[in-house]
Structures are given as C-alpha cells and as structure tokens.
Length: 124
Image 1: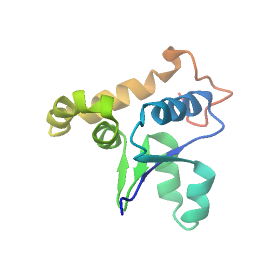
Image 2: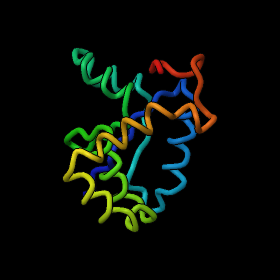
Image 3: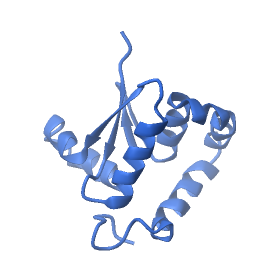
Image 4: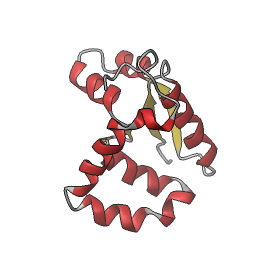
C-alpha cells in the first residue's frame, strides 16, 4: 500500500491555493493529497513550531516532514513532470544553494502576481 504525500497549504492565500491546484493538476499518478493548514493544526495540536514552519514554507508529510527546498525536491520525485528536474534539484540540495534559492524566491512571491499582503499570513 502506497502512502500519499500530504501537501499542506494556506487555504486563505490565493498564491497557495493556486499552487495546490497546479500540483493537483500535475499529479497524474495520484501520489499527493492536499490539505489546508487547519487540518495540520488539528492533526498536531500541540506543535505550534511545526504549524509556523508549514505556514512559511512548502511543507510535505509522508511519514517524515519535508519543508522548503527539501519539499521541492521531494515533490519533483512525485510528479512525472518533476522527474526532468529531479537530478538537478538533488545536486543543488547537497549544497547551501537550494535553501538560499528557495528563500530568495519565497521573498519575491509577490512578483508572481497572485499573493499580496491582505491574502498572505507570511509577512514580506
């Protein structure tokens, strides 16, 4: 039995909702399952640090947690279109560059036009 990887997203943020829809569309093999952050708070009620981390970065759970760039690498393994990028992402993951690149893109998520201060709980 294959365990699906759970992708947690902020269902109040347009950018996060669009990202979840895109991942669902690209998940041709049904390897992921989307869940709002409120489900995470219910599943792990005493772990506010985990909730805070999940609110600030892409977070996946499949028996172990993957956040930020590590979650992107894991996601590339699960989505068929991601297989093209997996070798490069894995190489970058072995360096500090992956986390730096993720942080740089996350800081500039407003540039992508789907996130703004009123929608996003994560401050600029």
